[in-house]
Image 1 (cartoon, rainbow, N blue to C red):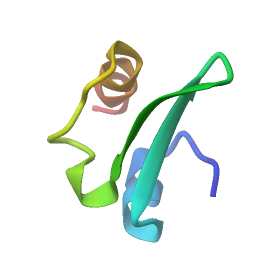
Image 2: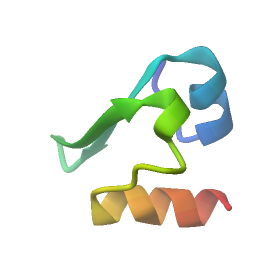
Image 3: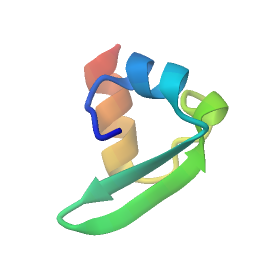
Image 4: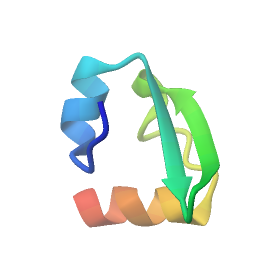
Length: 50
């Protein structure tokens, strides 16, 4: 699924890919959503969600 709702993604998927400006900027297992934030855009998404 494609979503901005991180809790839904974490429940429904095994893997999350973060895309910014048409480019993949992060790719990780859903269970690692809050522990593996590599790209600044991923960090921004997490901060917006919290």
